[in-house]
Image (cartoon, rainbow, N blue to C red):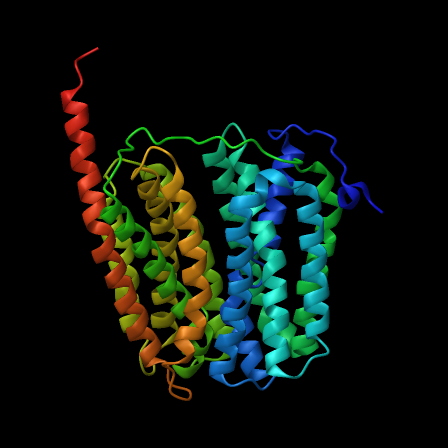
Amino acid sequence: MPGFITGDSTPVDVNARKCIGAAILMGVVGPEVFIVQPGFVQGLVEYLGFDDKTAGYVASGEMFGIAATTILMTFVAHRVNWRQVFAWSLLVIFVANALCTVVADPQTFVGLRFVAGLGSGGLISLSFAAIGLTDNPDRNFGFMIMWVLIYGAIALLLMPTAYGLAGMNGVLWFFALFPLAALPFVRWLPVSGEEHVQVEEDAVNLPAQLKGMALFAMMFYFLAQGVVWAYLFLIGLSGGLGEQAVANGLTISQFAGIVGALLAALLAHRYGRARPLAIGILGGAACLYFLVGEFSFLVYTTAVVVYNFLWNLTHPFLLGAMASFDRTGRVVVYAVAMQMIGLAIGPGLAATVISEGDYINVNWFGAGLFITSFLLILPPVLTQARRFHALAAAKPPA
């Protein structure tokens, strides 16, 4: 068997281009279905005959698998051979997607999507960990996000054509074979990583109550994303648009997401965190107001472009805020877990409020969760800023 499956432990330079490139590739393969979830859910409804609610449960099943492995890896990553985890995760994704092509029972399909999610979670967690070991993680995370969104833009654009040419099974076979194409690159990845806790310069220790509010804010924010993102394609169709028009709008929105992520990196601490988070979270909620009833292609595209831009602008500021709420790095670890839990629960929760073919309740529910998230994150962010400025003012001049 190949060395990366049997336990090859040849060391690599984590800053080498081939190592960074391999980690980015794993970071793209991991969320290969989630990043195109609106198109995937539309395929379940239009081509497999699942109803809207069942499609939501399918999406939730995969996200629960991702969440389970991501949470597990926070505890065991230092004990396992990373290359083995990468390799077996890729194989698990291949097998689960291949089996989905021969399954018609919705419950079995949900189970297989959960298994695929287990593999995806291994790739997502360790690809982020590998990038975190590099000398310039901020830049390399930026490249990873960029390539994930480029993949999503291209895939969403091509999905209607792929469905027309090969049906749902053709798309599932792509999701199966893409991970196999990544297997040869596993040997360029690190075997393990030492845990380096990097404390933010402006980190202070907040009371447990405020930390708890921040963690629930993270969960509610990504719960809202899970509720809305899975149904954006079907929301477009219900508004009177055609499949390709919806795909085109979502494709453009992916490129807007790249701009949002890069803008967050450029802004950094220039305007603090409260204002960017207010614009990002509340702006995301406002976008959903325009996706009710019938709407034009211009309205849909503008709404999803702004929505995706604000999502990718907000995410880095949320993570930066979590890192500033204690000086041990633990809040960030818990926050990532809350993020995955929110994304896992969201699609299934949305399925409970859908009226057949009508998604207005999804929009209002998502908007309400966004607003709740902002109300929860604001007190910790403002308290952290006050304490940091007070400590800075109390320091004697150098």
